[in-house]
Each structure stands twice: as structure tokens, then as C-alpha cells.
Image 1 (cartoon, rainbow, N blue to C red):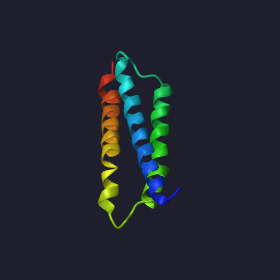
Image 2 (image 1 turned 45 degrees about the horizontal axis):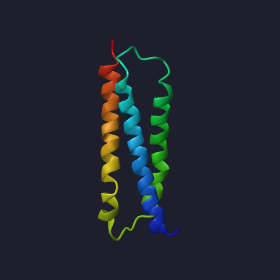
Image 3 (image 1 turned 45 degrees about the vertical axis):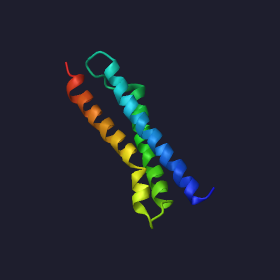
Image 4 (image 1 turned 30 degrees about the horizontal axis):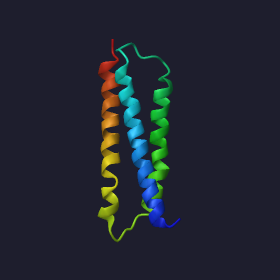
Amino acid sequence: MHAEGIHRVSSRIILGLALLALLTVLSGYAQPPHTPELDEGAAGHIFQISVVLLVPLLLLFAATSDWKRPWRSARLLVFPAAALIMAFAALYYLEHYYLRP
């Protein structure tokens, strides 16, 4: 597979992982407010794994980018970045306000 194909596949996986992180945080709002437990459960672990997996994929994305046209590559990261910002903002609200007794 050529660098362009790897770049395209890595951008799609990055988007998928960012949306997975957002959806796992949003699933916490489906539960009624309760006192948080010591272990965050499966959704918390899925969120953590998806965020950790983003790091090597972002490095792969950067390594296969066409640096002669950086805006084309940066455009592919707009939606994943927005999804991650929303995921972390929703997680902050969930942990600090929604789940407090």
C-alpha cells in the first residue's frame, strides 16, 4: 500500500476512534445520575483505549502526510478534533456535575 492509501486509512480510523470516544462518553448520560463508583467500568476503559490508540495513528497520519500541501491533511483532522473536544467536554461535565449527588 502506498503512502497515500495509508494516509487515507489512518484518517478514517482516527475519525472512527474519535467518534467512539464521544459515543462512550455520551452513553454515560443514558444512565440516571448516581454516585460514581471506584472503577469507571467498561465504557471508561473503552474511552481510554480509544484515546491512547489515537497517538500512534496520529503519528502515522503525520508521517504519511503530503507536506507540500499541509492544509489538505489538516482538513481531514477537523472532524476528529471536534469530536475529541466534545468528548472531553462532555466527560468533564459528566464527572463534575452530572454524577454528583
